[in-house]
Image 1 (cartoon, one colour):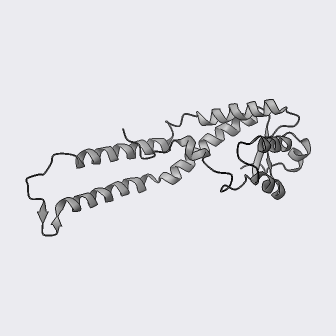
Image 2 (cartoon, one colour):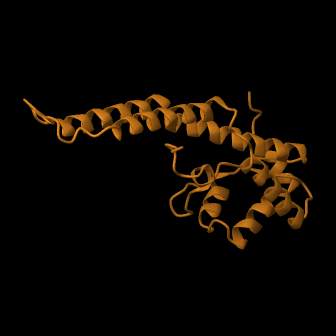
Image 3 (cartoon, helix red, strand yellow):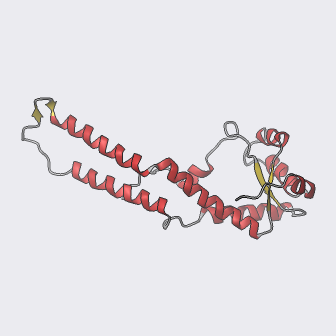
Length: 185
C-alpha cells in the first residue's frame, strides 16, 4: 500500500533547526530534580509520545482511506493499454487528457483528506501523551520569559549547553512558581 504521507510522523513532529525555529514559549519542570532524572524522564516521556499508536484515530483512518483511493485510481490508470486503438480525438492526444484527469482526481483525494490538519491533530495526540507522562511524574508546565526564550534560541538544539540551561530553569522552584503556565481548558 502506498501512503500519501511519505515523511515519517516523527520527522514531521520534531523536524526543526535551531536557526529557523522559534524558541518554545513553555517548558516543563520539577523542583529539586537531578539532571540525570530530568533527562531520563524527558527521554522516557518523549518515547511514550513517539510510540503512541495512532492507527485507531480518525485522522489515521482518513489517511488510509485516501491511500486506498489513490491505489485504486493508480491501478485503473495502469490498466489495459489502449495501444493500437484511436488515442487521438478532436482535441489531440487523448493520453494527455487522461493524465490531466488522473492528476485532478489525485489532487481532489489529497485535498479531501486535509493532510495538514490531520497531521496537526496527530501531533496533538502524540504531544498530549508525552505531556500526560510528565504530569504523572510530577512535572508542571511553566512559561518562559522573553529573555529566557532569547537565551534558549541562541543555544543549539541538542547541545549540552541548551540542556543545562533548560534544566536550571526546570529545576528552580522560584521559576516554577512565578512562571506557572495557565491551566488549559
